[in-house]
Amino acid sequence: MTGRHRRGCVHLGDRDRGSGSVLVVGVVLALLVLTAGGLVVGSAVVASGRARAAADLAALAGAAALQRGSSAGAACAEAGQVATSNGSRPTGCAVSGFDVEVTTSSGAALVAGVAVARSRAGPDPAPGVRPAGR
Image (cartoon, helix red, strand yellow):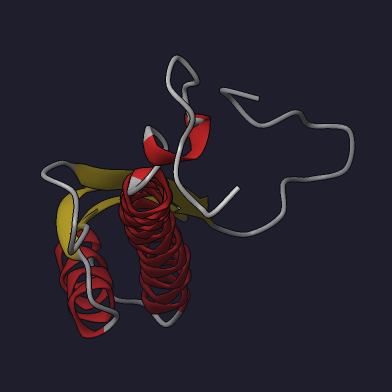
């Protein structure tokens, strides 16, 4: 043979020409979609962690303010400042005795929604007393 095709024979390699490029484009697109999904999930996890940490710290700050003798309003104001300084927006504060419950929200950079967290802080209850709501 001199490199020419025989009549009636089909050379299968010619039909596959360029299919590698299509495969590479498909794999690259799949990787881009997975990366984008990972970034969105990561952004939501970071926002949730930020909201939880801010709520915890704000509730502790509010409870500490109550222990120092501050009013409920002053304790909630301090809790709000702590939440704001930790990158979250304070959305609620309630004082019951020496317990402070704070709610915060934090937006995610790549997600349209917001993460909401609630935390409560106060002194330990007396031995044998079960706190309300637990």
